[in-house]
Image (tube, rainbow, N blue to C red; front, side, top):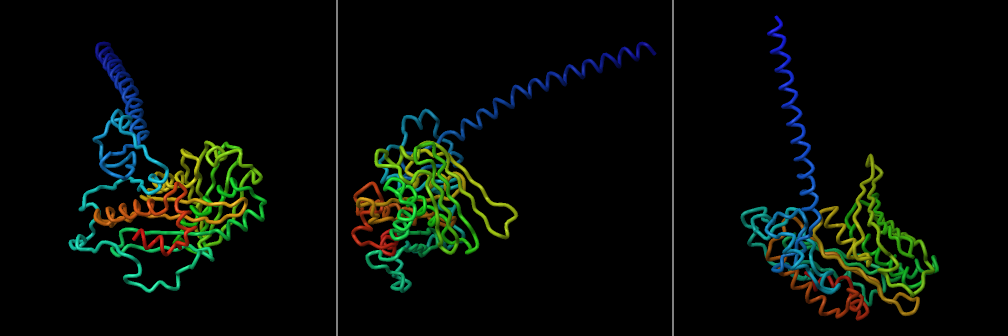
Length: 346
């Protein structure tokens, strides 16, 4: 009986020792795996042979952090606003985006006037505020263009704003209107730029009906600061809600540029997985807004490589036509309307 008890005790001690060793091995392995995972997500890889900005979780893994640092994407703000931000799962392979056997026979998108009479949507000299959206003929791309000069001037008068705060709320309103285009009338879209700069934040709320309102923390901020200095570092926060939803949708990313439109473009790519090219800007003469507009080009799941190449060429042509960094204000000042800009893109 004593011999059996000793054997049992010895087996229990041996089992406990093995369990302890396994536990120590697991605790050693798990942190190292987690650190590698976080490290991989922290890098944004940009292949030099493509004008896309590849999402950190993209399917391509052939670019090391060292190569990324050596080949970091460097371009002007105008070129970056005409570059698509690539999101998870995108690929240059045709088979990834084709939904049927005859998808490759889809025509390259052309001007919207080729299939539909859109004279009712033309807005000569941008006299009216307008949000115009269109899709490519193969359904692979959506283009949204907006002009809100009158709305921005009303906001500045009501809040006694100077040009720098006016530029901030104008860009934020444009981004919110374009990013929320197509949602239900009862839905609400709130965009908040929670920066640590002297602007003290900017909040804009839009609805599916096209209604917009907003405010900045310091409307009397002078021209001693640039927009990037006024916004500062912080976060881009988006809240979407609907009366029938049990709880609102919340998204957040970091402010990396401070010029609002590029930061919102990064938010759409990283938080909502929307591959897009976004630009929004304003132009002032004293305290009077003379132009306020922007465009949002979104890549849809069934977009073919041929359609994307066509759009990239058109985006480059649009940058040349504008000739400035504040896209697309020069085009708006020249009399180009949202319909005209959409026609150039498509």
